[in-house]
Length: 177
Image (cartoon, rainbow, N blue to C red; front, side, top):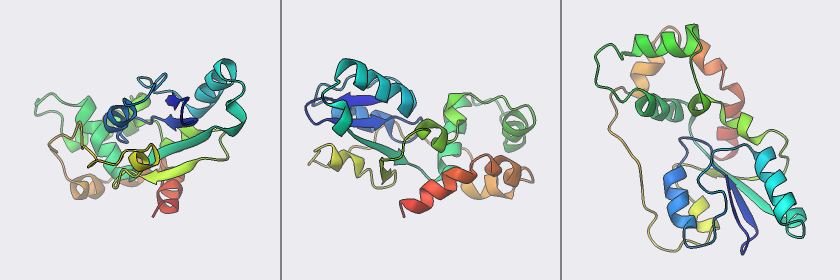
C-alpha cells in the first residue's frame, strides 16, 4: 500500500501485480507506506489518521493481474529453488491439498474488501504508472524466467480446484479488459 499526499492518490500494492515498478515510479514523490503490502482497509485508516483533511477525497487505485499469470508469478517467487521436486504436482499439492499459501497467493479481491470506489488498472499495460504522473517509458522491474507455462498449469487435474479460489479475481480481471 502506498499514499502520495501531494497527489492525494493511494495505491493498494497487491503482491505480484507490479509492486516494484509502482514503487520505482512513485519514488518521485513522498510515497508513504510504499514498501508494504496491506489491504485497502489498513491504508484508508492510515490516511484518515494522518491526513484527515485529504482522506474524504483520496483517489484509490490497484493493478489487477490475470489470475493464472499472477499465480505463476507467485509460484516462481516462492519456489525459486531449482530443486526438481518443485514440479507442477508439488505446487498443486502445496497450494490446494495442504493449503500452504501465504499472502502472495491471497486472492486479489481480498486486498480490496471494504472498498467501493477504486480505479482498476490492468497489470499488462501498467497504466497505473501514467495515473501517477509517469511520462517516461514504463520500466519492467522484477520479471523472472518461467519454469512452467500457463498451459502446463491449466492442464493439471487440480487446476479447477485452485482457480475456484480466484473466482472473484476473474470478475476483477474482466472489469479491466
